[in-house]
Amino acid sequence: MSRFSQFTAVAAILALAGCGTTTSERAISGAGIGAGAGAATSAITGGNPLTGALLGGAAGGAAGALTKEDQLNLGTPVWKR
Image 1 (spheres, rainbow, N blue to C red):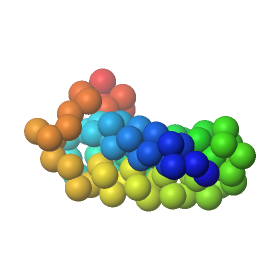
Image 2: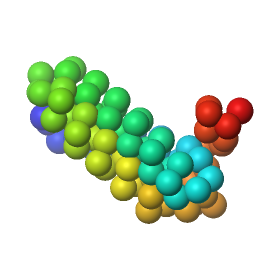
Image 3: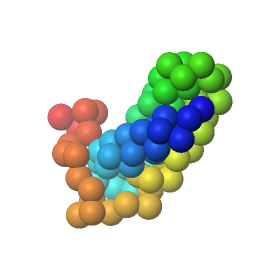
Image 4: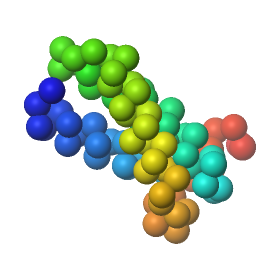
């Protein structure tokens, strides 16, 4: 995977990891979004989508758990609307 693809995947994960108000909601939504972004990026760049999903999910979950609502807030999660 190229450096640009890696940067793009990490940027997408960090930007989208902020759905939810509690730490667990943010971690779960971040992991789901990260897994999807990682799988898609890996598939597009010719990598292994499963590996991309695992790495993206881990990074997204960590980003969601480590950010606070006032640092990054993308609104109410879909399951609470």
